Length: 289
Ligand code: SIN
Ligand code: FE
Image 1 (cartoon, rainbow, N blue to C red):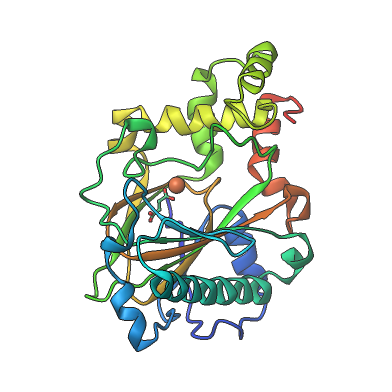
Image 2: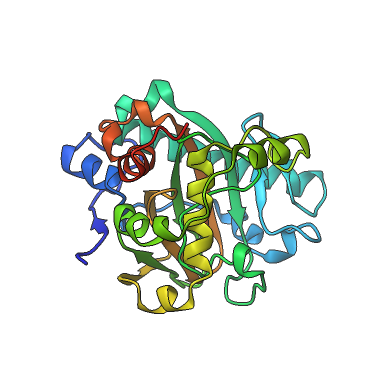
């Protein structure tokens, strides 16, 4: 496997010009890595770099598209300071995406911004929720019908610690390996899950298959160990961007990251044929949504 990482020199959130080679790499599932692009914290924001900010029982802090902040333990001043920091990251992440990928701009749908102050290494989770295992993002309760999950990440670790990921093979290779083992889609089961409100809308065959890939990868210890993959330390003070529904990824260590999710219809990509929906439709020979 060649590297799935494209390292780029950009140092300004707004100054990117759209580059066809970067766009096709991103849409092929590669990670765009910007080691010189930092999210600058204000001096007083250093005090917000602590897991003590997390409300009991939450993993992440999030700022939703309407501007509501969730997951912060602290008084009104702390809440306002966190909302300002996360909101500023959101604006910079949006500027970056708008300048790199202008064709997406009118079609993007903003999802929550998250701030993750917890240390990755000490988190204990069930295998299915364990992001230390290689996976593509797919969510059991929220069918997306092929809508893309574009994510902008920044490592704001104050001690210079990298956020270490493993990045896996292209999605087509994942699908060729795991589709033959996937449980078949059963429409009445999808209807039942919806009636029981396990899913917020009817799970499509696309959503079913993406969950089968997610679970197939995470539950296969041999795949986790031996699949084509590279270990990537994302430096403190860097930014990286990928389609997390397409790029197999696992987070191995690190602390203090901000992340912005943007959704995009696969039809509005530069090359819709590169999307997971197109890949899975081709490999199954079926219309999946
Ligand atoms: C994930 O999206 O699986 C986790 C990424 C991270 O926390 O670095
Ligand atoms: Fe993930």
